[in-house]
Each structure stands twice: as C-alpha cells, then as structure tokens.
Amino acid sequence: MNPSFMENFEIITFNTSLLGTTLVNKTESAQGGIPTAVPTAVPTSALSNIPASVTSQIPPALATQIAGLNETQIAEQIAQDLNIHDFYKIHILNYCEGFYEPGPIINSTNPSPSQNLTFCAPATPFSFFNATQVLQQELKPGITLDQIQWPSEIQDAIDAMEVVQKVMFVLYCVGCGFSGVALLEAIIAFLFDGRLSAVCNAVLDIFAFIALAIASGCATGLMYVVVNAVNQFGSQVNVSAYKGTNFLAITWVATVLPLIASVLWCVDCCIGPDRKRRSNKW
Image 1: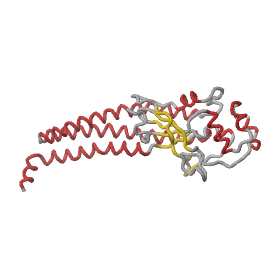
Image 2: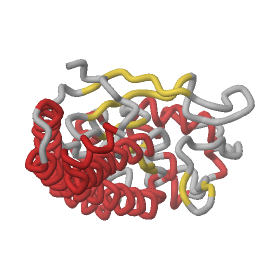
Image 3: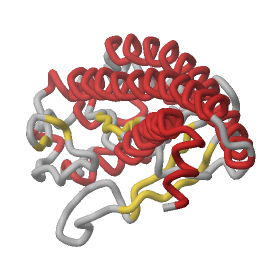
C-alpha cells in the first residue's frame, strides 16, 4: 500500500513551522482563542531591539544566523537552521511530514500556503508518532528541544495519545471484521430468505457498530484533548495542532452505517418471508 494513501485523512496535524521563533518573538497569532493552522506574518523588528533576557536564550548555533534580520526573516531562518519540517500529520498506521509551499508565513503574496509532503512512514500496525523524539532526531547537532524550551506538558499528551491510538487500532480491526462477516452473511440472506439470517445480520451489524462507535469516540476524544493541550502549552514555542476533520467525518459515517443496517435487518426480521410474499402477490 502506498504510504501516502488517504494522507488527507489524518487524526491530528502538528504545525511546527515557527518552532523556536518565540525566542525572538513573543507574538501569538490566534483565531477564536486557538492558534491558526498556518502562522500569520509578524511585525518587523530588528534583533537589536529584542531584550537581552530573550536573546540570551537563543541557542549559539542560531545566534549568528539571525542578526540583522526582521522577525519574518528570523522565522524563516530559524525554521531552516533547526532542520525540522513544517508539519507532521498523524494517521492510524503511520505519519507524514512536509513543508508549506511557498512558505509558512501568510502575507499578501502567500495568502494560502499549500502542503507539500516529503515523506510518509511505511504503514505498520500499532504505529505511533512520538513528536518529541522525531523532532529531537531532526534537529541539527548542537540544538536541543530543551534550548527551545519545549514544554513537558506536550510530551504528557503524546504519552496518553500512544495508549489511546493502540486501543483505537484494535477496535477498528474488530469493527471491520464484524462488518466483513456481516457482508458475507447478507449475501447468504438474500439467497436463503428467512428470519434466522436476518437476526444473524442484525447481531453482526450491532457488534460492528459498538466496536466502531467506541473507536470513533476514542478518536474524537483524542483529537480534542491532544489538540487543546498542544495549543495551550505549545504557544510558548509557537507549536500548534489541529484536528483532522476529514478523518472525524469518515469514522463517524463508518460507525453509523452498521447501525442503519442492523435496524433494516430488524425490520426484515419482523416482516418475515411469509408477509413479504403476501405483499408481493398484491
């Protein structure tokens, strides 16, 4: 399977395009209290105007690169020097990463940056994206997350995410299994009409609905908890996250379908083959 298959159906997207810029800029960009998915342009200001208490926190490996730049240029320079990607999209089986094109800063010449994927990890069961570990591995030598003041609360949310994501994977597998068996049973039911086949299909679809409903509930809760935690504590380092609305839509649609099928099979069971034959004569 292509690793980038359905890459637009991510659970959560981490936006790290301005990671580290709070060392020279404390401006936060937000809409409705939630950091925007793609950072907006920041006011221009020379590095010499930034207080010494802030510039003293800048890692030495970056200090020589940003002198004399305005804050917009600093944002782009720091992103380049840190050597990390602009965004990371987390899926059930893998994760993808890439850059905003033509750049992460929204302005008159770049009103709507697009996402350019550069890598998708191979799809594997119980896959888990550890943002802290991946970011630390991608940082250039001489720079650490501690120097960028990476909040420990984000790692706490990521640890909780690992457990929930594994439970979701198991439940999705169970739900898909019941749905597959129900599909085969439905074919048999059309060939051999009877109440027994209708009851079997209704039971299978109900089990599929229960498994998928729990998985979808976990996914929904995971999105809100992790995204809120990242946006709350990640603002310190200009890291934000946002929910995968496409995944949220498709998982609940997949959950509702077995419920509808079970209701229809229950109706078929109540009608019965004899009553259907009498109605067909009329």
